[in-house]
Length: 249
Image (cartoon, rainbow, N blue to C red; front, side, top):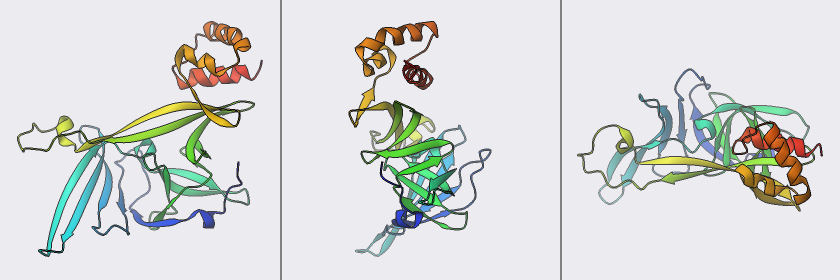
């Protein structure tokens, strides 16, 4: 893996993202994101709705040059493209080996990391080789970020995906209030598990097919271990225990 870059080198694309206050798990997320390069001065806020849904609320200001008018409107999306739907404490490793702490938001959809040094500073968009957010460590493999779940002789990784579903039809004004009709779309997250074989990423299936990631000669022992310990290979815990046991063989 390539050596980690200096923090000063990794800061590549500054955004005017003003973090209004440090993350407090007992309160709603309250971070305003304003992209300086956007001509329409859009704003985005992570908000917990009254029904408990975490939403992404985007406010748009569009300047029409032909009639010199200003149009403002708001769009609300269910979920967010961010890891765990918010900003969390995290750290980056500098070339000196010391950890540098930041407030972070990992955008799964764009596969980029936002960092802000304190509540009054601007944030920047970066793509480091490695970062840790809320106790979860991500490293760059084949130019994508994957979370490290197990790393000894063998390695188990977890990759996240986020897709914005915008299949909602145009609103007529007669839709019932609340429910999915209150949203313009939904950020839907999913994940896959990976290992590295022959210096390349390989998908690790869940369930009984997970055993196919190991040599045929070892599968009977692994299957016996799964049965004896009543492991559920459809879960992250079951897969981690399977990889941990395989390293003892």
